[in-house]
Structure formats: structure tokens, C-alpha cells
Amino acid sequence: MSEKANIRNRGDRGFPQILPVREQSNLITELVRERLDTVLPVAMKEAGLDMWMILCQEDDLDPVYKTMIPMDCWCPILQMLIFVDEGDGKIARYSVSGTDTKDLYERPYIGQLEEKQWPVLLDLVNKRDPMTIGVNIGSVKWAGGGLTHNLYRQLQEKLPEKYAQRLVSAEKAAARWGATLTNREIELFRHAVAIAHAIIADCFSRMTITPGVTTIDDLVWFYWQRAVDLGLEPSFRPYFKIIRSNEVTQFYGEDDRVFRPGDVLHCDVGIKYLRLNSDNQHLAYILKPGESDAPTGLRALMAQTNRLQDIFMDEFRVGISGNELQQNILKRARQEGVGAPKVYSHSLGLFLHQPGPLIGLPWEQENPLPRGEMLMEYNYAFTMELSSEGTVPEWNNQTVRFGMEEPVVFTPEGCRTLNGRQTEFYLI
Image (cartoon, rainbow, N blue to C red; front, side, top):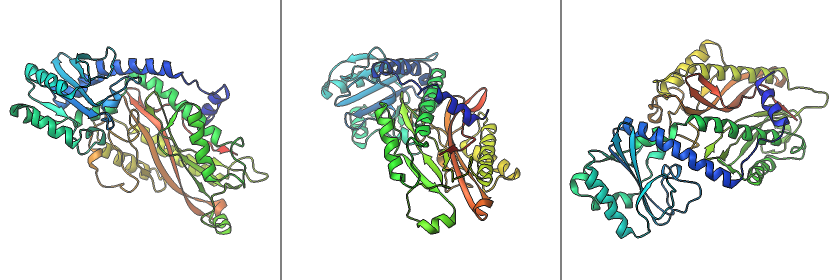
């Protein structure tokens, strides 16, 4: 049974469960607690931080801050999270604000008066005397640059000079925190991707598509509405396109957006569930009268792209950079004869793009990238985003490129898909 069939059979038994909002909130609080207990000490130690301050304001929340608080809380005015490394893997955690962080943090001040918050922060600094104070002023990893100029200036002005001089970028800690998933999160991520696959199956079906009538825009809004109706948020604007023969394109025009028999449908879509982002690219084929499957040439191109996926997953190693991994994958794929392979993958999980090792960009397949210098570790998740090229005999040997994308996770067992992968077309 193919991996694609496995995905479909799971959907046949009913749509994957989505927890009520109240249960989601309780679960997210427990997930944050586990992350603070296990991931945070590693992130701060590797970054060499004695103290980490995350400061932000109500309408401009730091991206890392949003992953460190409960789901059901209001974040008024000025927010301050302070972490202190006490050694032996123990991190003291403080929230100095009016935000109800439950029992995740000590709360030396509970209120919304900035003139009372700053003295509490300064008192913590003076008592702890940290040699390195991390703040989110990173310039490479996007999630590590959330401190505004305004708050950075205030922090420099209010801190005693000796401590102001100890401010350093916490980018490395932010990246490690954001890229690492706990084992429990990985299991929940599998379920989130199962939900994502089920929505795609709904899109790529006669329930949704009437050949000759349904358009790209119709499918974009169907996906978006389906996610919202399920209580989910799209990770990004849904994207669909048509891949068709040059002959059909010439007949209907390059601007034609109606799905027609013989078309390949391509999606790039994702949802967010329990703060975990999915990101998929799948392919469907609209059968012509008398057909029972996609043409052999199209199926061969999907099989070739699946082989590139095999190579991608097999080349993961702890301690290599995203740049190295990309080049290792491409070198092996070219040696095996994969047609014009491209690899442009990114980390996935609490954030849609980044902050883990970048594995290439669509427009950069040769030169190293600053965001690709981060080293690989276990419990990092990624999109296995890539493409290959081939000729399709049934389309007068037209050259066609298939892009495919599937969430994967790297653990001591290797790099594996989170919920199977597509190896056969959705047939419409």
C-alpha cells in the first residue's frame, strides 16, 4: 500500500479530531511548561546567556514571547519575561507584567504600571549580576529580532552602565528555542499534519471541483473557508495553480484559471493547530473521459520527485549545516540522475519559516546562505520542499517541473515524514 494510500485511508475513517478550544488552551499551557523546563535551559546554555530578557508591548508582541505564554491570556501594555540561568539546568523564570501566565512564571510584580515594572526588572538584574544579558536583537534569524528600537533604547537608558554594556544578541537562544520540538509536540504535530492532509483531500475531490467550472480562486477560498469552519487558521494564504500541456495552454490562453480535464493541480497550503504550522505541496490530476489514472509520464515525474525526497531524508546528520545538507542532497541526486533537482526547505513548527537551519532557497542552489549556517540537531522539524524536472511524452515531450512539500521531523531514528507523503495523484 502506498504512503499516499495510507493518508487517504486515515481520512476514510473520519476527519481527524480537532480539540475544543478550552482543551486546546489547557494543552498548550502544558506544552509551554514542558518547553520551559526542557528546551529553554539548553537554548540559554548553548547561547552562553546568564540572563535573557524578552520585552515587548501589547500591540507589537515579540514572536518568541508569543510561544512562551498560555493561549488564554491578555497581554496589556508592557510585557517583560526575564530568565536567569541558575546552573545545573535550572532556569528561574519571571513575568513582570499584568499578564496572567498561570504558574509558568514567578510574578514579582502584578500590574500594568510601567513606572513600577522597570524597578522590578532593575532589582532582578542587580541581585543576579549577570555577565551576559541576552535581548532579541538578532539580524539573521527573523524570530530573534523582536525587540523594538524603542524598548532597546529604554533598556539601555535605564540599566546601570555596566549592565547596559553586557547586553548581547539572544539570537542563538531564540533560534534553538524556536527550532526544537519536544517529543510530545512531535506527536501532536503528526496529528496536525493529518488534519492538513484531510483538508487537501477535500479540496482535490469532485465534492469541491467541477471540471470546466471551478477556478483557482474558487479553490483558494474553499480551502480558507474550510480551515476557518474547522476553527483553524491558515498558516499563510492558500495557493493553487494549474500545470497543463502547452497545447491546452495555447487553446485556452495563459490567463485561463478554470480547472479542465487533463490538468495537473498543484497546491501550496498549510494550517496552524496547537501553535504548530503545517506546509504542504500536493498534486492532483483531472481525468479525461476514458482515463482511470494520470498519464505515465506524469506518474514517472512524481516518482522521480519522490526519489529526491528519499535522498533528502537519508542525508540528514547531526552537526551539519543547512547549507551542507542542501549540497549533499543535490550532489547525490545529480549522481543518481534526478532531473534538474532543486532543494529549498525551511524549518517548521512554532514558526512557518525559520528559525532552524535553512536548506536552500528556490533561487539559490549553489552558494551558502547566512540562515543556512545553523547546525542540525535532533527534534528539528522541516518542510521537505523540493522539485525535479522531466519530459512528459504524452504532452509532446514537454519539460515539466513538479514541486512537492511534506512536513518531516529529524530524530535519533532519522528524518521521517510526520504523516506519510504523496506518491500517487489525487484523481478527480
